[in-house]
Amino acid sequence: METLRTAAEAAQAARRLARPLALVPTMGALHAGHLALVEQACREDAAVMATIFVNPLQFGPTEDFSRYPRAFAEDARQLEAAGVDLLFAPSVEEMYPPGFDSFVDPGAIATRYEGALRPGHFRGVATVCVKLFAISGAERAYFGAKDAQQVAVLRQVVRDLSLATEIAVVSTVRDLDGLAFSSRNAYLRPAERAAAPALYRALQAMADAVTRGETNRDRIVAAGRAYIAGPMREAYLDVVDPLTFEAVPDIAARPIPRQARDDRSELGDFIAIGSAWLGSTRLIDNVPLTVPAAPAHAVLHASVTR
Ligand code: AMP
Image (tube, rainbow, N blue to C red; front, side, top):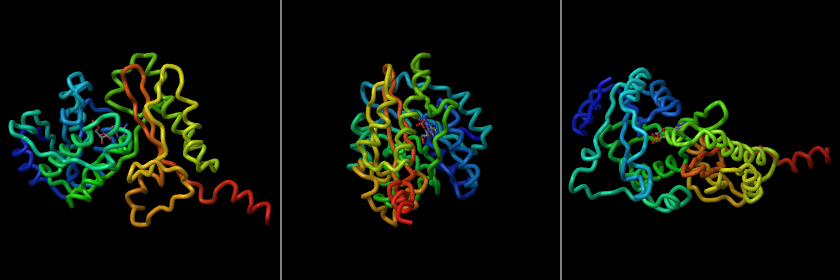
């Protein structure tokens, strides 16, 4: 694996790699979720370029940019072992040299949920990703379903700006107790770590409510809210369309546009999204909602009338 620090060198090296080329952008402090992205990229594409860059543009002024975990040597070792061909790990000055003044500003989709809690976050994500797409020239870029709104924002940007990089999504990788792996889990104190799986349990309870035939957003959310207790405080829980991140008041009343099915298939027809605070750490997670083919009452009705 070659490790390069400048955009010019990385672009040149990427052009020499086999096609199709996969891009796996990360902020480092790697865990099993990141490695799942690399593994899927290795399976689906001929060469893999990974990036490690803690992007200051996507952190708010009071957020954790300076104390974000950094573990470069161990990260590089893991990426090489996983089969990455090229690692691009630029400095902040390399990505944003003096005079840098152009930004990618996604619209309404970037103002909801994560965007509301982190103003400017998706502008930072979109700007760095468009730069990485341009530097790599990759045919596909891999992102985790855990950050489902990030996937939705980037797909909107790729569509709107006619970019040539396709956004591929990899399922969320979880610890044994259900907590989604995240570099920020390192911030959790032992008691917070013990309480953390409640967020996934809340989302599962929302999915179970849908499986039982519940279609109303408020009642689905209430089923999840019952699990957010003790030291955990809710930031948001909701039922949204995974393409637009608009809340869906009733999942039975919402026809799924045919042309959107492909993008939607990896994420579910609808998703339950959630975020919760444990101390000063905010967790995020989501699960797909599978709408039963026939609502429970229709099945009951059919068996009564038969
Ligand atoms: P980050 O380093 O946190 O910016 O994450 C880099 C990529 O890894 C993003 O596309 C994330 O969505 C993805 N990712 C983070 N955690 C997980 C996880 N638990 N499962 C799958 N993908 C993940």
